[in-house]
Length: 421
Image (cartoon, rainbow, N blue to C red; front, side):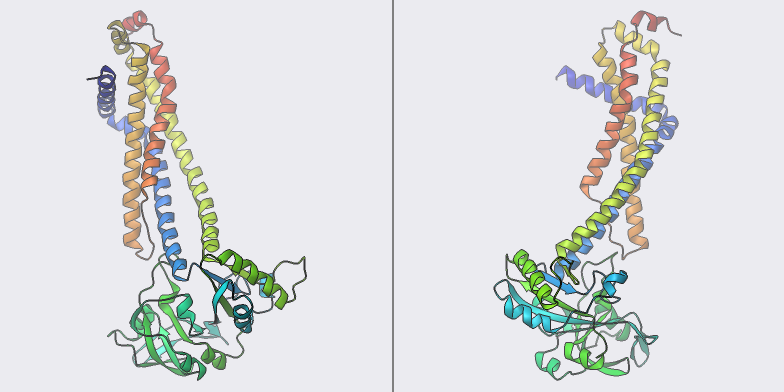
């Protein structure tokens, strides 16, 4: 067997013995490292889970789609920006114009209208005999929306062009709404009341995938034909147009839609757009920028714990060098080289912080699982890169803060060390 491997194995074994012999002191020393690694891995796990949910959510909305709306906020409430709220609304006629003029890059267009959940001080409430729910949102969609953003169905179907043209009172309801109103699971063909109008259920969407914090608004959404929504709520102008780009043409479609809308809305040449265009990957990129800031804050907070832990390791290793001066002298007298002494104390420091990293990872996994149990709607995934990074960083701290004590130990004079009491 290679003598270097034997030396490394012996150093690790000695390090583990030293850590175990002073386990309470060792635990107090690495407490900062445990806290720091736990914080980083837990935050990384929660953010990774959130991102996966959002990616799935927007992938279902159609990766080739370009969304056109008045503001950059939630279409249900027109967004928080007062300047954007003063913009002119998007016109539903834009959908047909975009499809006709930009047919080379745009495959199809659809239009939606978002009905506020509170109007004239009254909350939208869906009712059936013996049950009701106010956890609903109402949206009108053109029938071809299914071609742009296909959905899975628990039961039934989407409404037809004929039903839309006749402005019939039919609806497709979300999974959660169906469970609230029809606990027996038999919703298709039945009716419910909403805002003084009776609607017949023609379809129930399957449980939606992805979403924000584990919640997907489509599960509580009630969808009615676009023309029905216009006839019922002529005063509402929260329109969104969706343009589906041809395969491989989304960038061209995005630029051409923007230029066409500026002409249609007579935007001055040097003025910014008075509308918002967005794509799924742009929204995901915005989320990444927000989570990136959260990650930086988490790293800064955990960095303090890691710094305190590292200083504690350096301190305890300096104490260990003093306590084991005679041992160092004996090893040197028996032929140990400086490299061997350095290796021994670096192995001990890295083992100490490595144990702290493992404990931090274990606690992070337990915290993540606990959060998942307490808040099932909050997705949490422990990424392998976070585990590897956490353990690597903890060992690197031992290497960095253990170097000075190790070098100091290697420089002890063996004769003086043997005389030390």
